[in-house]
Image (cartoon, rainbow, N blue to C red; front, side):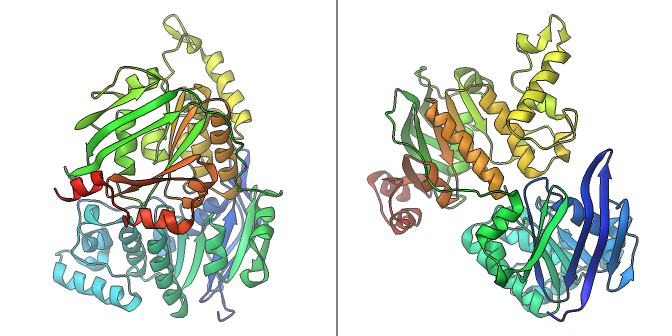
Length: 513
């Protein structure tokens, strides 16, 4: 770090109506540093960075870039000032190539595109920072880790020297995370300045130089990373001690509530993604399904919820007759609750208010209808009650779900599904992208469901989460279960299963095809 301040924000306020999202915020960024921005969901991190990037205009305060006071009214203003933002949810067109996505909308591309020349420009930056991205690759064919790097290349080729990375590792595997931060460190050494928004405290400790913590819109403090620790940062974030340790009590299990037999499901590429999987989940237990992302877990979850066709095999819910052709409505009626892997695309209707999202799937219930008319009071009272019970931090029941932070969006889904009192709860990546306080809350609700005699199927790539919550762990590799272990199995044993080292007869049969 040079000590030169490339960003200086002083006394920044941002209001949404009467709600103050950022209150008297001071923040600075030095040249060549990686500066972590930490806080609970809804603490104001993304709002502050959206002010810096021009998506929002601040209501009070001063923003300086490279010593000059600026008035940023749009992202194009921010880009001209050398600030680029990589959003948590990718802004890529899947059908276009890497190069086409990068130069889309850039005047530098020219009126008549010279694709070969543009690909060469991408390759030069790619080689300089070791991104290992092929300029002519089509986006939808790339793993998410590479797509994340494409987003960063877009910013670099727009000549940005200040990078805002918003939850860049939320959907990456551990190896992809490591590769990404190797590139980030290279950028910092070249004089780029990077703001890292993340909930992952281990990433803060490993990869940042300084960290600023926000709570309820205010800066609690800024510290050198080398002079702090995870416990101190946690307390700064949430104002209390947080424990993510395993504290599940042993209990007797009941009847089989979910049974899957010899299930075969195809991927979007029309090849088998789930290969002859069988398992049971009983009342009062959590079965965790572990594995590296992309080994059939998502397709398995979608088949159970009725979102993906079953090629072979059966599913039985709550002792029902075995089913092969199922729909989401059928599974909902049979007693299945579902926390999807993608809260924005599969769990919520973002333009709708919180109150509408909280009754989805139950909107035809007599509780919310009076003859031909909607019972507005019942809907409003229900929303207010769940907002309080699940600590959903919002401006009110009518606030669009799309305006909520990621953690509060997840709480809306969790509140809706738990409120239905399902016999079986399927949770897919339930804490992905959440802060430590929200993780503790969500995990607590899953443990509560188990204690109340529900069957919980947890699908997660977070191995710590799987081991902390599960009674049994099934490991999925290449579409099949490579083995089942107890929650206290060693990381090495689980890791070997995740790598497909242990083969069973079912696996060998599929691998021979």
